[in-house]
Image 1 (cartoon, helix red, strand yellow):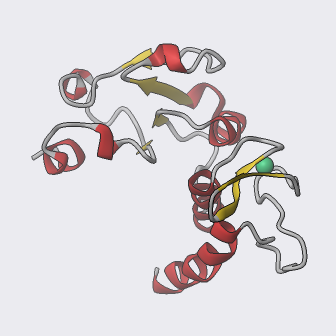
Image 2 (tube, protein in one colour):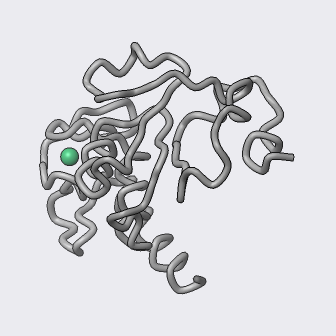
Length: 154
Ligand SMILES: [Zn+2]
């Protein structure tokens, strides 16, 4: 596990800087779609990929997925606030084993079968052991709740 974290940590700087994770530092390349075109934010020249729309955090999530071998076909995964680029990756691998949810599902018109789940009030409605993994990024900071209770079921 420590070598995996080291490997990921070594690559985080490259991904957040937009550099090619395959080692070519000459032209930043998206690790999801291979695009070399970027949409900038002040101080963040590779904030969003112009090809697939992946932000830095989505590219980082994909890097972690690739490094850990997640997901594997046959897994059941629930994805909150599905980022477009990650949604495509997970749906492609998982098929019917992939479900999406959000507090405001209408914000995701291009996501098939997304359902409404309120992380504060609806978690008890989920059947125990119904997913192999639940994934989200950039979600918990928006929820006024006891994060420990939500994440650990405390
Ligand atoms: Zn891309």
